[in-house]
Length: 202
Ligand code: IMP
Image (cartoon, rainbow, N blue to C red; front, side, top):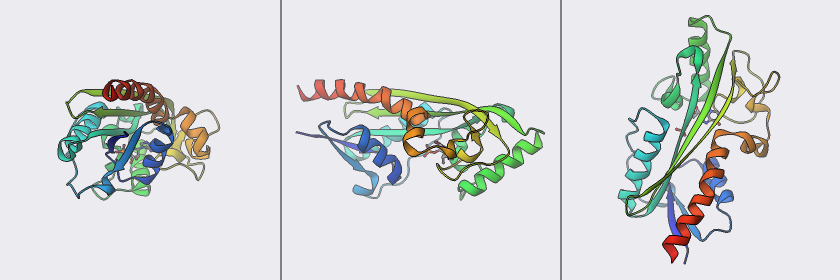
């Protein structure tokens, strides 16, 4: 029988990505859109790992099901690692990609930087009903430049250069998954989930 796993997201792109990664495994994936309307978990951790675990525990306890959560963001060296865990709301509570990118450019200007080493980081945390957890992470290093390029991706991608000439926003979805922080964390997670499924279905 398929094991039910709640994915702590309402983001359809993330959900689709996970459904593809879990294809063929005996799991039934539910999203937050499929279950009762719970309040948001309070993500007050200081690291991506802490926030992913806060979310996974919160929704596992609320639903009584195993839960997978992720947390990700951008760290820019010239900004002492900001926006970090505040990436989604860098420009404030109602922030979105455009305002976050404006804020990024403003903060870069304040420190007189037109480019800086940077990285995207992703943490995945899976919490089982017995409280045990699996955590995996992924990172991609690059450079933030204050000149946008490309129309794809989302978030800070038009400013995140993976090499001299190309930004994350110029990659196809498949190319991005190959090298992205989220893709790496997911590829490390899938074999661990398979192990968990073997043990829990015995
Ligand atoms: P969350 O993990 O959904 O909380 O997203 C954190 C925030 O980090 C997003 O809203 C984006 O601003 C940023 N972020 C995370 N991953 C990416 C990415 O792959 N490209 C661009 N921005 C990202």
